[in-house]
Image 1 (cartoon, rainbow, N blue to C red):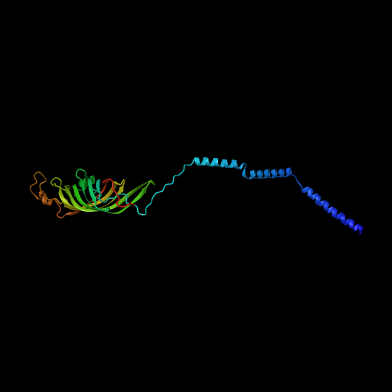
Image 2 (tube, rainbow, N blue to C red; image 1 turned 90 degrees about the vertical axis):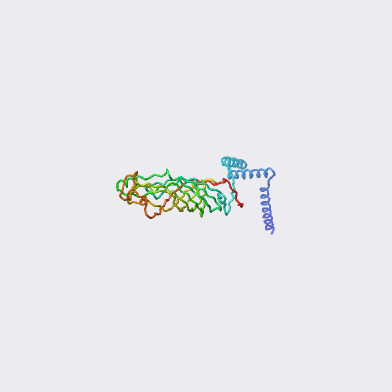
Length: 312
């Protein structure tokens, strides 16, 4: 019994001694605590340095310097705001304006005579798409006969009746059904309109004596002429434009008679025979003659400036 009690006491003493030893091992003073804290901070800083590449403040300053250098070499783009309207105003108003148009014309359908002309037109626009006006063309002195006709007469003894023009004047109406704009060279924008023109007037013409030029001679005479054409106008400014036009001037002409009667060949003493009879120099019935002309020129609108009646 005594031996069992001593054994129990020994076991309790051994347990108590082990607990005291572990408590002594875990005890530490203030210096040791500060040392451990400093070491932990240095280790954390080292780890942070490894992850960020060094000093954090220095790295941020370096990044700001690089960003500043990049921005310094790049121009700041200024934002611009352009007003765009669903319905745009017409670039150049025509209403209540005068249109003055000098031009040069060339015939297209007569291969024997080139009917070159200098023209001038004046129109008044009482609406933005309708105009009334007059045009005048001068031909005499500008025309030229083709060598084809001359050589054909000489080689084949065949003559084609031709006509010479002196002048022409017409009263016209103009209608603009189409207008718009187009771009060129990805930089310029031009406004354009297309128009129809037609009217009635007079032409002063005469047949050219090619069948029997030794005897026959013709004078200029007036003819009633109708004209119809189409054209396009391209605006350079709001008062200046370039235009191109194709117009047909149609009238009835009595051409030279291709039949020559016998008689005197002396023009100065031509007083006998049918050859000298002026009534036989022209054909019995008139022939519809078309002078299809291409014209190019400038358009000047007066006054130069205008005001829109309504705001945008």
